[in-house]
Amino acid sequence: MPSIQISTGISVYYEWHGEHDGIPVVFIRGTGADSSRWMPQVNEYKNIYRTLIFDNRGVGKSDSPNGPYSVKMMADDTVALLDALEIATCHLSGLSLGAAIGAQIAIDSPERLATLQLHGGWAKTHGYAKMYLGMLGRWLEEGGLDLYYDAALLYLFPPDFITNNYEQIMSVLENMKKNSSPIEGMRGQLDANMTHDISDDLDKISAPTLITVGENDMCLPPSYSRELADGIKNSELVIFPGGSHLFGIQDPTTFNKVTLEWLSRAYE
Image (tube, rainbow, N blue to C red; front, side, top):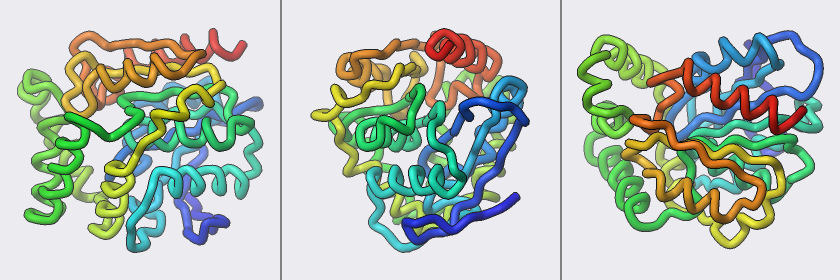
């Protein structure tokens, strides 16, 4: 699969899946995660929509320049990729940092979005989120990438799910480490998390918006998604019972059903 040089000065790795006409779905992943983590969704979405996944600045096969990064910078990267691939309008779906990026695009470039999905997102880094994201940075600096991934994984899934799906979780962990960000890229993405704040601009988001969060999300608990829903006028909030931050991996069948049904209603 190809990489492309974009106008913000970096090379971005991307993949197309599905052969369909109409508006494509663009997925944006979260901190330290390469685009392959979207495959549980892509394998279903590609039967209906042409889908685009890509590695953000700082991860996978895309460039990882020294930071600091910002959500605004990474949103500009995404719009530049849309320009380079001649995508005028898309359905955008972002998880975690990807949700922050998606919301920033909805504020700055509303004409580029037909619909918006924000999964496990947040409007402003404050309170619990500030403590959690700051802790990620300390794990990275004090223990390197191995400790970072080992520790972060415990927040990504519920304890019972880890116990009952141990081999699958260990496979996810090994995949994380195998396709990990360069440490410079991880630092940059963590900087973007820590400085994120669109709390005063949520009313500028006009695209139909689906907001989802796991009931047991220990990274960005449901209160943060409620803040998004309260501020985005044309939004719907779904809380997945028993769900984690990575509910799309925990229960892809339910996640895909809910999000695809919403998309078919929101853009008919």
